[in-house]
Image (cartoon, rainbow, N blue to C red):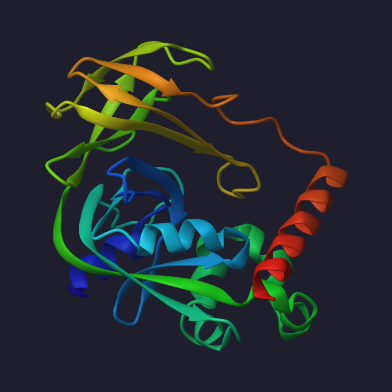
Length: 257
């Protein structure tokens, strides 16, 4: 369903969430920037995130939620898309450069330091090859906007599919055994992932994502796995940013071999 409505929703969105079930039926969530591709929404994973891209592509369906209200377009409407994923490996970067690079440069400012000119594209050639995750949208509906710093996404495994909802965490901390959540709408019990992300807007130089995994009983999440930290990490120094960029290059090159 590459309708005009879907294209407009993606074009106007900010950072988004992608939810799916693993082969073991466990829910997972990852923070992404959705790009408007010629045939529908696309997530253009760098080869540094090759494992994530292939894990998502192996799922029978994915859910993309666009709830962040910062750095959005004039026509933004909080939206949920459900669809079927498929993966294309663009090892030369030609498809990404032709169809999607201009959208990434507009939507994800850090990419401008790596690919905003022919010279930069040649210098950072390893940044252009992508794993293009296409989403064939089969359903679209409104979704609650993120209106509070404690708003989170809860993804639950229910009857073989991933069900997502907006929740608010009463207390969220690393090492927590149980987290009480207030859901916008009732969510069925089951294995669940509580996902949060935050970024420095509008530059997106800092983008922190974290996830608690456990079991949801309708009011609380019993935590089996917790992140080391939650919340937006402090701004990095120039030296730290250079080090992170070198690590991105190293991982991209390693996975392209």
